[in-house]
Amino acid sequence: MTAAAPGVLCVIVNPRAGGGRAARLLPRVERALRGHGVPYRVEPTRSLPHARELARKAVARGEVAAAMGGDGLLGAVAGELRGTDGVLGVLPGGRGNDFARKLGIATDPETACAVLARGRTRWIDVADVDGRAYLGIASAGFDSDVQDIANATRLPLGRLVYLYATLRALAGWRPAGWTVVVDGATHAFRGFSVAVANSGVYGGGMRLAPDAALDDGLLDVVMLGDKPRRRLLVTLPRVFRGTHIHDPRLVLVRGRAVTFEADRPFVAYADGDPIAPLPATVRVAPRALRVLAP
Image (cartoon, rainbow, N blue to C red; front, top):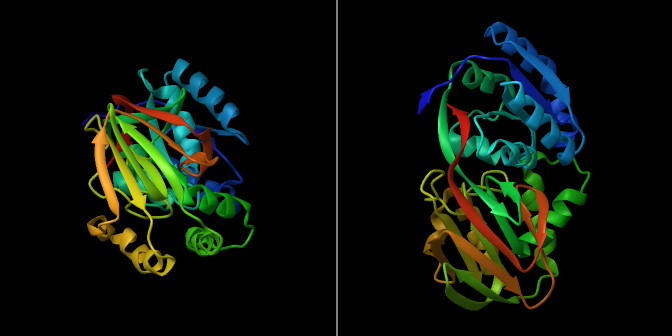
């Protein structure tokens, strides 16, 4: 890590993130930034393409681009900063805030302002699917069904929305046939899902790939084979602790390039947003992004 260069902070905020959580907390964040003596300006956004545009402009002005919203917003901003001199700041304003958890940043954005004021820059890897960047996990299959339900619900469940969506998706689930190619080696199986992890955390704190590192230049590929539904329910709490990896129906491999597809249509999601229909190819760009970390 290196000391962060001083400069203006461009807060790119999605007011609707977390069911309006970001908008409610923005005044507190602004007070905290003023209290830390951090010069800033606020740029509201309501779409990922607009957020990318704001990030490009922030980099051109030499500002730190701080994304305040969900993990999808962070991934969009990161995609514009990778390979540049830009620096990403993290202000957790969504429901999951999993990238902040991985970095050790408080999920309360007001508290996270201390990292923007006193943090240090760290180089991390960025994953890419057909030109679209993400920081956390891209997954498909059962996870696609879960994410569809989570995104559609309007219930005020917070991070529990993923548990709710998992239970609903399980009721109608049937296994899929998968083909996964990792650095040229082919894996075929029948089961629930394929996940390609950069950070290893998703779904509001689920440690799907607990040993995934943000700066090792590798992707952690998690393949979950078929099992009775009741066994999946038993396993689910273990995912939050990362102890599920001992399940014999789970295979974890690492690589730099991953292509995966199923025997029926799925859309892969990354960090809460649809990123690509299958088949999809994921590659990792090692140490391509600077981020402010504790």
